[in-house]
Length: 220
Image (cartoon, rainbow, N blue to C red; front, side):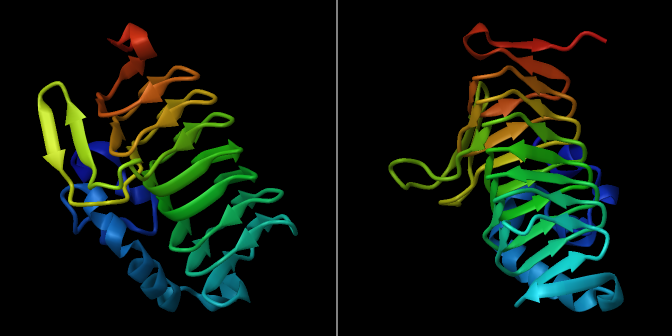
């Protein structure tokens, strides 16, 4: 369940052809900067404007004057970038997204209709279609001892070879307020994370992560 096809519907991102190259989506993280740089060359420039070097924003996006955006970055139509958002480059933000006040993005792909609307940090990560991080939810992308990140679960231990890797948050995931997704977290489709949770490892699809109470299947 940690394969790209298991986590994401690639029809909902301009990164479709890029991500199709990777069996596991976290392997794409070191190449996001070059991908976004190449993507900029393919854009219809009549549909975008460039307020800064290598920053291209859809004419149909809304960007607060107080937002700060570095390149390479592409922001697609219908997206709202709110007050004091900080986009540090190597970022693709899809259509109809919300990047909220004081939210920071770095080296990430945000699928269409995803929302990170209040005080969030997303680094070295991929957020799927219609995923949502509650207020104050943070994705941690670097271990305190600076060693490479390993994806761990009950019966899984995967050496990623990556020093920086936040989380793979699949389509339709809901992450509760003030939660922390530790480095190397993978959350499957349609899953929910309780508020104030500390998450690491793999949360299966169609599950509810309840912190110390464990993981339960969602009821249909």
